[in-house]
Image 1 (spheres, helix red, strand yellow):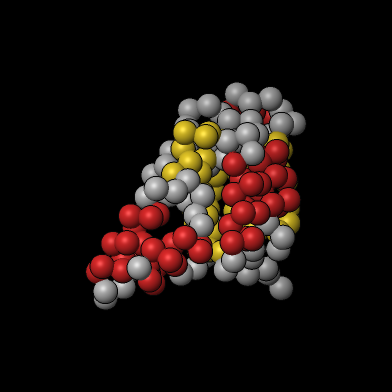
Image 2: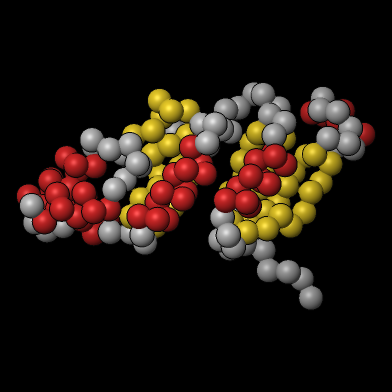
Length: 166
């Protein structure tokens, strides 16, 4: 029997740090694992120029979502145009993910719950109440929420809820 293939899988292009990044991400997220590692062989080396035996891809899961990390070379870099949202129920969760994912990352990219990790990947560490409060039918509440949020690096649920309630 074949394994069911996830319909949409995120592919992350790294220069040569795919395995390192996958190991890091699976250490941060609890329900995670590395599933398979493939290496460059003679034919793949000939096409890519990456040394034979080097890790080519790492298939891994984070919280049940499948990802592939590819060592593809230096041609492409990550930008903030794509980011991963981590929805957090508690301030402790926000603090945990923020601490882990900002370690070695770009401090200049830390704003309004957004961060860029040490591999250049962008993340949004947000409370689960974010969408509800931003899209409230009471525009005064959502404006207060947004004003407070725009002054933060790491989100603070208590402060955001206080601003929302006025």
